Amino acid sequence: MSKEWPLWEIFIRGQHGMSHRHVGSLHAPDAEMAIHNARDVYTRRNEGVSIWVVEAKNISASAPSEKGPLFDPSNDKVYRHPTFFDIPEEVGAM
Amino acid sequence: MADKDALFKFLCRMGDNCLIIGHRNSEWCGHAPILEEDIALANIALDFIGQTQLWLGLAGEVEGEGRTADNLAYLRDAFDFKNFLLVEQPNGDFAQTLTRQMLFDAWHLPMLQALKESSDERIAAIAEKAVKEAKYHLERSRNLCLHMGDGTEESKRRMQDAIDLLWPYTGEMFKSDNVDEAMVAAGVAPDLADIKATWDNFMDEFFAEAELVKPENAWFQQGGKTGTHTEHMGFLLADMQFLQRAYPGATW
Image (tube, rainbow over all chains, first blue to last red; front, top):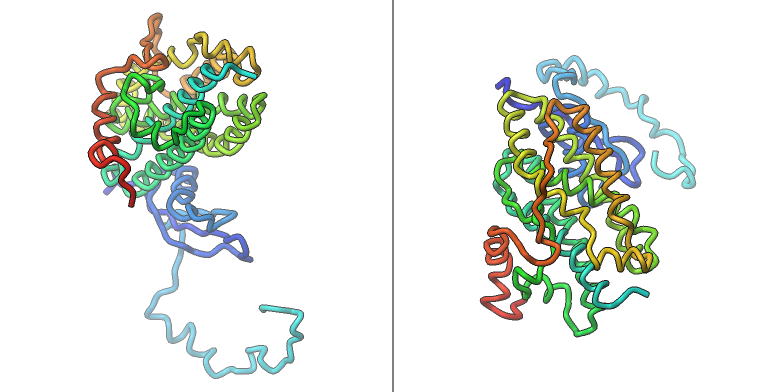
């Protein structure tokens, strides 16, 4: 396995987008080449204006088994959602 | 205004270089060592085919005999193609493909940058569009060549073999003939000596950074620019032109 290039997670900011979004992953020997490869694999159809690459091993993820303690407590707290305010239309998407 | 015949030849050279190196890259489609490279090579191939359409389209227009870019690409024989011998060389291994690409890109980019200032607006417009692609191509091919040059013992050996093999084909890119001189005189294209200076600088920097040895050639192959090709050209055309030759005018 040591001969394999490391895996990189790719984040692209779309033309209209406000933040980078995860689009997928690919292999590359280093960050610069990962950006090159991401350009070829994920932005061929004018999908992006900016690319972030992160080596997959540097991403820490929450464990699926922790789903309960992590997320369930927020289920019954409707008051945390700003649904009780009237949003003026001019504000647009929140 | 440049002489029509010389201008036609110049445009064919620009277009044929793009067409042939584009076709060579397309041969990797489905065969590249990893998925990412497969996509990248196909992408680059398409960049070059796109540029070919512009150059050969304009060539046909200048010639004024009703030939389209497709006619020029698919219905000419080897001796009518004016591309460098370098670009028709077989893909070989990956090092050979990338070395060929870098040697060409390092000529192509300064050439297009200079052509942006061409006295012929149509040429300046094509160059303006193509130069962004060429910049990316060079960055990419240089980067990969550097990586392979200081990669494993095997990749280093393959890179050095590729450079030694292809170096004799680089001289032709800077050898000026009456077509080139006519273009310079008309302000259409740059003096190839200027392009060579930029290319030499690039190569010196490359070899300073890479753990590879710059060949010391005193003698260079030539002939592509005037239509005298290596034995590979006929096979390449047989493959590329088969469909239009077997089924003339076929569309889909």
